[in-house]
Image (tube, rainbow, N blue to C red; front, side):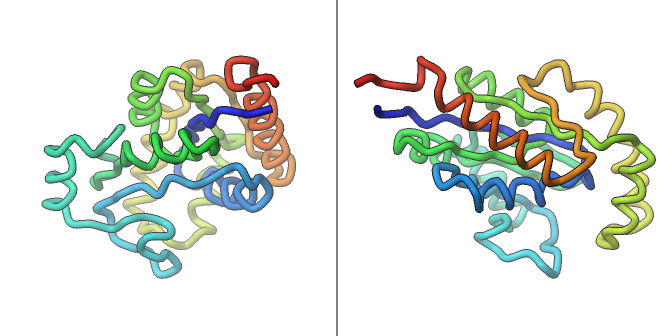
Length: 195
C-alpha cells in the first residue's frame, strides 16, 4: 500500500514543551521529517544554524517574502519566523510526514494554503505551570517571560481552530498521543492507495 505524505503543524505557547515533544516524535517516527523554519531572532547558545532554524537578517527575510518563498510567515515576540513552501511540498510529495512548528497565525495560513494539513495545539496544564517552565528554562529575560505570558491567553484562545489538542502534563504521554495521531492520520483513506 502506498501512502501520501502530509503536513502536520504544531503550535504552543513558548515554554510548553513543544520542542522536546517534537524531538522525541521525530526520533521515533521514521516517516516524519522536520521543516526547518527561517527566523530573524538571535540564536540561543544550544541552537545550530540549519538544524534548529535558518538564522537570517531581517533584510534577507524580507527578500524571501518578496520572492514568495514562504508558505507562511509572521512576526512573533519582535522577530520574524517563516516556513519555506519548498520544504513542505518536496517532503510531502516524497510520502513523508512534514512536521512544522508555527505560531497560531502561521498554522492557519498553512491550513488555508494546504487544506489537507493536520493542526495540533500543545497546551500547558495551566498558566502557572507555563510561568514555572519559562523561569526554569533560564533562556529568557524577565521582559521576554512577561511578554510570553501576556501572549499565552490569546494563543490558548485559538485552540478551537485546531484539529487536535494535547495538554502536556507528562512528556511521555504527550509523545504517545502525537505518535497515535500521526499513525491514524497516515491511515486515512484519502492518503492511501490500495493495492
